[in-house]
Every structure is written in structure tokens, then in C-alpha cells.
Length: 316
Picture 1 (cartoon, helix red, strand yellow):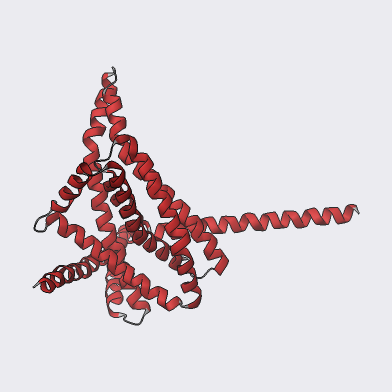
Picture 2: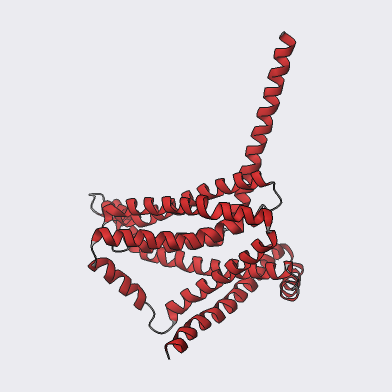
């Protein structure tokens, strides 16, 4: 009887170790998958704060909470089931969808540059802020949230597909568990950072009103720094989209049989690596990243040109 009990306890301990190892494996794989999608995550973080511009301060966090809830629904109820089925039944189609997503990232990055430096730059942002200020608050909030969730659907699809491609070698249920972890982790990171960003100016104003001279200086510094912080995040997000999008297209074209572009970049990366000694790994990576970003900008520029010319010709 005692021997049977000890054997049962041994089995339970073995199962517990196996479960712990599985959890560790899922966590590690989720970390790798999330890191692969870092470029889109930065862009998602950069895009979201614009949806609470012009909104009353007390409504900022509730709006972000609703957008985050919509983001989780997008990932778990729409994107994840479709992506998992495609990865199981038509994995080659998932690669093509991933490349289309990469091209879309290139387009988004180039479009942001066009809006920043092209004709009439800043005009759309001014119009959006005027609508927020003039509209009915409840309706405006509803419109902002639905628009943010639609945008999140595209970015979340990119994050999930890129992440899923990173763990394509795992079993079906392992992929499902990993992607659920990725969905919650990415959403928490993105909207947690967004909440900190949009409330940072309120923190600065609160500090600026205190009696301490140090607190006042810190508070004024925060208020003055936030516009620049948002600009930097936006610039990093744009660069990340071009880099990630270009790299996805580069690797995808190689996997589908068109090897020339990838081989050129790979040989250039190896040449830089071999020629720069101790800094070879870093400079090699920078070379690959730079080439991917240039390719992404080229692809995005073509797509922006097409998207801007086609409506004009249709209008004539």
C-alpha cells in the first residue's frame, strides 16, 4: 500500500516537472515570438495615443481600456483561430499572407513619411482634431474607439502572424498556447505603455503645481518633453515598419524561390561582418537591417504612388 502511494507521488512529481517544463517552453517560445514582432509592437504603441488627442483627461484611461479589450477580442476571437487553421491546413498560404502583411507595413511606413513631408502634410491631423473638438462627446468617443479597434485589427494580425511564423515548428496545441500568451503579453505591453504616455503630461502638471522647486522643474520638464517623446516613438515606429516589412518580404521571397535579393543582402552582411573584427556582429546586423529598411521604403514608395495615383485617375 505504501509502495503504491509512493509510486503515485513519484508519478505526480514527474507530471508536475513535465508541466513546469512545458510552461517554461511556452513562455520562452512566446518571448521569441513577441521579440520577432517588436517592430509592429512599437508602431502599435506609437499609433494608439493619437486616438485620445483632444479627449477630456478623465476619459483617456477608460477609452484606452476599451481599445485594449477590443484588441484582445481581435487577437483571440478573429485572428488566432484563422491563423492557426491556415498554419495547419495551408502553411504556404500563411507565408504569402505574411508577405502581403510585410508589404502593407512598407506601405504604412512610406505613407507616414509622405504625410510628414509630402504636399499638405499635417492637414489630415488638423481636420481630425477639429472633428473631435466639435463633435458630440459620446458619439466622438464611440467613433474613436471603433476606429482604433479597426486599426488594431490590422496591426494585431501582423503581430500574430509574424509571431506564429516564429513558432511554426511547434505542435498545434503548443502553437495555440504560445499565441494566447503572446496575445495577452503584447496587449498588456502596448496599452500599458500607451496609458503611461497619455497620462505623463497629467503627472507633469501635478508635479508643476507642488511647492517643491525640484518637483516643479521635473513637472515642467515632463510636460515639455512629451510632444518630443511622441515624435520619437512615431519615428521609431515608422523605421521599424520599413525594416520589419522589408525583411519579411526579403525572407519570404527567398523561401518562395526568388533567391537573388536575399543573397545580395546576405553576402553584403557577411562581408561587413568579416571586415569589421570585434564589431562584426553588430555592424553585420545593422547592414542587414539597413538593407531591409531601404527595400521596405522602395516597396512602400511604389505602393503609396499607386494608391495616390489610382484615385486621381478614377476621379478624372
